[in-house]
View 1: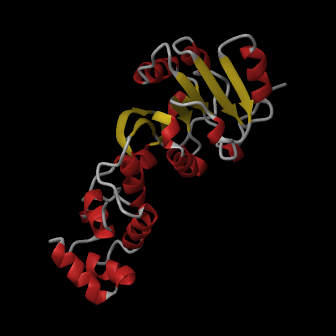
View 2 (view 1 turned 30 degrees about the horizontal axis):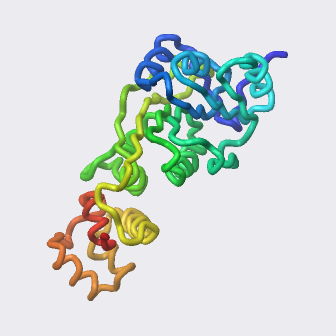
View 3 (view 1 turned 45 degrees about the vertical axis):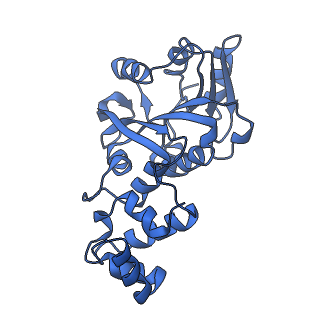
Length: 257
């Protein structure tokens, strides 16, 4: 049976051996590590990962690929789970684990959100994503890529773009560049908000109206009078816009522990 990549699953398989090797090296794995691999596909990273660690748990949704991987991995230190990563019970996973994944663009954010929701299980998340999306994750204030995604991920993890990957490294080749990132989970946020749910609601409110000044964006949350008072107390210029504030500024605005 000939296998055809499924667009519905965002399947772009990494076929460049040099990039595969570079990814494995970048993960800096150790013999006692336990790795969660998200979307192993045809398994080109699974065996090299398994050769370096204690165990690999690979979760594959594809109905054809998962059984194939199970056959190939029988009797090894690789366990294959035929499952949807977004529905998989992370609460049953051992800890600590390292995560490696080539993330489909259409579900990259839900996957990252789920990993970070169970961050006590993981020490680091290595991922391949589209370059534009990766730039948004690692973006800093005063850049057009900086936004609510940047703040959310950087609140919980130390992020780093490790290298760029050209479309030719994949089959089928995507129309855009990709990149390899590391998200090193923070034991605790550098500055912890009193109410994290409120913090991210406030951040989304500000970035949903990027052209407005922070004074006008925050007025929707706090009211105009309280906004003026809060900005004055924190010595934040009310004429700044959402992309001009650091994550630390947003934590201060939301109230910190």
